[in-house]
Picture 1 (cartoon, rainbow, N blue to C red):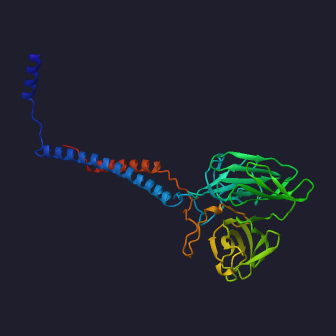
Picture 2 (cartoon, helix red, strand yellow):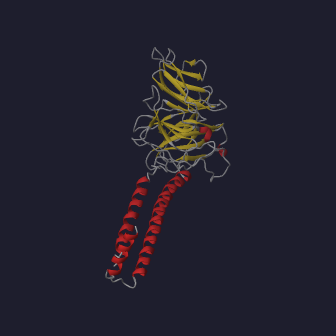
Picture 3 (cartoon, rainbow, N blue to C red):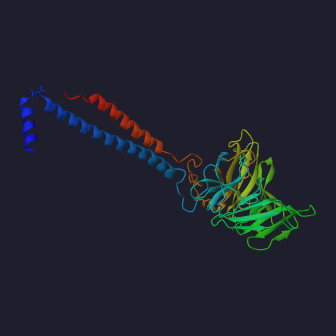
Length: 381
């Protein structure tokens, strides 16, 4: 070991010293500082990239909270009702919760319900589902959905997903229309029996059907049973009601809104003397096409009548809506009262995939920093 050490010293003493720049130490220190700055910048760039992506995702969540998923305690009627896109997912889980609107989509020909509290559209895969409009009925409280195919009547509990099936019989061999009575505990149906005669019935949920040999049950009785709101199939200047003995009474429509008249279809009674109707007005009306209104029945003095447009934007093309009329708030006597809720655009894509943003942001930051490192780095000589 001593001999080796002695040899190294001899070689060192005999070797010619290499020229060393006087500022070598300063340049080495500067290079070290540049490396530290680059490392810190890389960390900050990655943090900024991830943070910005999180901000974008957070904005999406905030928009969802303040728009389409803005919860309304107890539920509300949406301020607009749209048909659904053809690619809207179909759900077989029928426990979708309380709903505000139901209709048969003209695009997909599937039943659609709108969530009462979140405004979301859900396309249902109903067993033995309806294929004709007018045979889908949402209960006034929005908790049950009924539909009919031929003479078979189904009722589903939207909160539990459990269903009840009423098979066809001689009395309701073919069901044409379905409607709920106020209270959501009975279904009115009209159709034909096995002999082809007009028939109708009152079906208690969980009970036996009461059959009426009449075709007069084409409307919805009021909570007081004093009037029945019936449909008008032809354009006219009034909404039609029937008294208990069958006498028809008219409720004039506002001529300034419908100078050429309109057709009306009752959807349910919001209160004892307030009925919700789907009105379809011809061109040049104040509100053209289909829309929903709240109007006073003719069994109160005309001086106390009210007429409020509930929803202007509803699907056209003959779509028959079914409404949870219990969600219409009691009138406070002011014209500024909001009777519906703006859920934003529940049909818009609310989920953003930001993983690609994070990946591209990190890769871009690393690429830029590598380029800067090459520019700033100088070889030590």
